[in-house]
Length: 207
Ligand code: PRP
Image 1 (tube, helix red, strand yellow):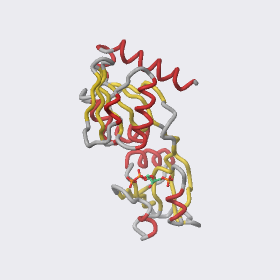
Image 2 (cartoon, helix red, strand yellow):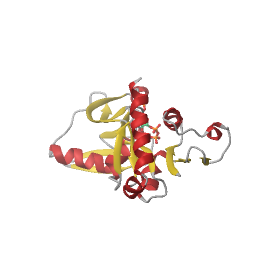
Image 3 (spheres, helix red, strand yellow):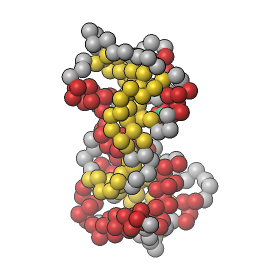
């Protein structure tokens, strides 16, 4: 049985469709209910819906053999897992944004509000810019508007959230997309199933 952690939400539905096409169907998952675990014994697969930012934890600790996590989470938390495939969905970018017309005053530390403290710290370290990190858990865009921070480091997909809050991208940090990840021991002990899935997912992405 291959245990798969899927990110709950719109991305997860796309991911499931790809897995189904790759030969790992589980029709009961489409039933509209509050269940979180679905199993198809014949296909040898069990799916769990988990919070997107938790997928890597399930996989790292072996509660799931494989899963799909955003590159943002992998960069931020560096879980001890293998990254097997870029699924080319859930595409967005990590960027620095600020109020329109913002100019950096290099005489003092830059105040950076973010959910991604490690990504932000590493980025500014590489630029040699001294920063003061303000860790927030959501609605990051409010921080520069209220004067809590000078800039934010956050995910930008369509750019709508920034636009509607009069913010703009100042610098792009890194492109983000969803990745297939595997538990390290599972890749040894369930290598055949995982390799088949990876190969079929790749095939499915070609056409
Ligand atoms: C993300 C991100 C931005 C928004 C960007 O938030 O933090 O707020 O999406 O998307 P856009 O460029 O298409 O407008 P998410 O929906 O993950 O919620 P959260 O930040 O409140 O957790």
